Image (cartoon, rainbow, N blue to C red):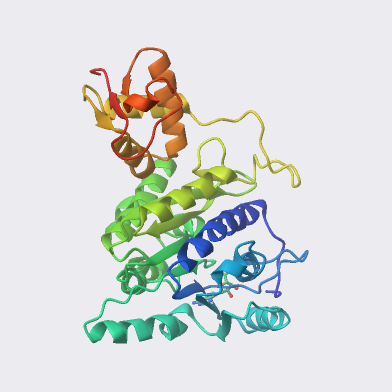
Length: 371
Ligand SMILES: C[S@@+](CC[C@H](N)C(=O)[O-])C[C@H]1O[C@@H](n2cnc3c(N)ncnc32)[C@H](O)[C@@H]1O
């Protein structure tokens, strides 16, 4: 394989999600004034055929060009880029070395596998923990392989054990589905899923198989201790599922920021991107598409049916954690339902007349009709 390849629209979409997430993630964590770690475990060559930046360079650029960089001087950033292929590694290293990094950023580029090098940042943490301390260094770990090998769930389990780890994993659905019954895939799939249950997908119809395997992987990520998991489906130019981007975090705030990033890329549903329907480049905004409010309305009315005085914070949490939608979508549903007299909204006395006021926590309460 040559060291670079042509970028696909869904890769641009993946990079857009990463870029938007890191834009919000860096300054948020920088307020903790410690060490922030970004790992790209399958880093690639750092550049695509027409010069577009790869994920490691995007991670560096978001920091170097961040408008709040001057306010982030109090913390240190460590970037670890791991790449197995020699030509990809050399190309990445040359690009990284040719750039100027902020003084509080250290960049390490390593040749070898994710498994071999991940301990460079996590091994130390485990030692600290063995002394009885609970290290809480924020770490964003991206794992973006071509296939199914090299990212065993047991390894992710070790990383998930730290309370501030976030994972962005590409689950390579296309090869998984194509080779599901091939004997040479048995052992890598056992490692990847951390269970033998993936075998139950054999023989299922295409849609059922996809749902079964993507749900299974999401459940396995939850099973290793990641509290919130969201999948985003990437489709190729023939509209076939190529992979799922699986984001896993311990933090509702991380989930909120990632969902915002995903909704920017899929303005109709926040869950998928297809090269088949992608607008041509330079026309990244889709006009006229909007979230399926009817679906969210039905989910909310069903979930809260017959309940009185539900705090707005509980409704926000439901929308954020249990649905693909954003809290702002939930507010629009409530606003419309209030206008139609379907729900009753109790605002604090001083805000009684302000129908756009929702507040947070418990200061606004909503009463839902029986379903
Ligand atoms: C999909 S590409 C990465 C693309 C990159 N994340 C981006 O978005 O620009 C996957 C890369 O992982 C490398 N690779 C394959 N197996 C690996 C392993 N076990 N550990 C580290 N890198 C590996 C491949 O050589 C390839 O460059």
